[in-house]
Length: 396
Ligand code: FEO
Image 1 (cartoon, rainbow, N blue to C red):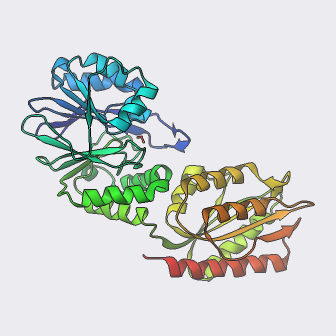
Image 2 (image 1 turned 90 degrees about the horizontal axis):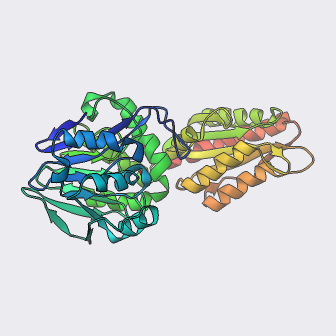
Image 3 (image 1 turned 90 degrees about the vertical axis):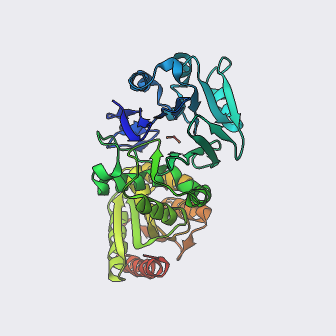
């Protein structure tokens, strides 16, 4: 089923109600793959869908325009959730040329046999006249992949923003002002934290380009379209991409025989006593997606692991590895953990923090076998120091 966005522009994408895992990102509310058809003199498709949803896309287009009338297919991003349908789509749209950058062509060429495709390679500042409209292209490398770009329709003031401003959120509604905004905003935050967080600089540059536009509608490639709350999502992206944090400490831990758990709770008590907010996650109870989302706006992070076989517990290692890849900007940080006859858990945490160049407030707090009263007091004191750092760093 398609949905009219504004004069001549319709959503023709697909809803993936059952998606629960997007390369490891837990998508508990499903996803959509958005594609948009502009019915101008030269009908133009902006973005496409994941391969299993191609027939839905083609049926949605066919309700509006004969498939052989589609003249252009714009590929804003080559990641397979948007491009894996292209081999079938380019065959089904016999008179369409694919519009993309040279970088995008090179990526598509690695994934698919593109030899039979008619291509229009666009360069910086190129435009494409499709009738009443002239589409403009804004290259936004690394927001999310090297070939990422936005497409802008000045006539409609619609920004087709690919992954940026998207949400993994399957709904029957298509617009922000038709849905539960709290859920949508939360999904946009989860999306940013798990997909775009390592690319804050690239997102800031894309935001600067978007700021020059008088936008009436942001049509991302996932989730709902922004039209009623554009300032809210632009302000959130400005905050997230510039590393603005809340007065909050995130405490992560895994524990073998409860000592590291007691230390985590003592740190949590210290943070609260110091006047900051605290969030505590046992890494085998909370998923990585939630942990990354809570890390996004935390001013401070304490992470602890018991030592297992000379290193961290497996899920603590997974959480550290995930955070290391996502590279949240500088946090006040504290490592802790219990050990027995050999160390390794707290040390692995410390080494992760060092690689992230975070502001490590002191050396790791360790407990041999059992966390003593003195060790727990040390943890509470460190928690108070984390609170102080978090309150200093917080901008809202
Ligand atoms: Fe939705 Fe980066 O792909």
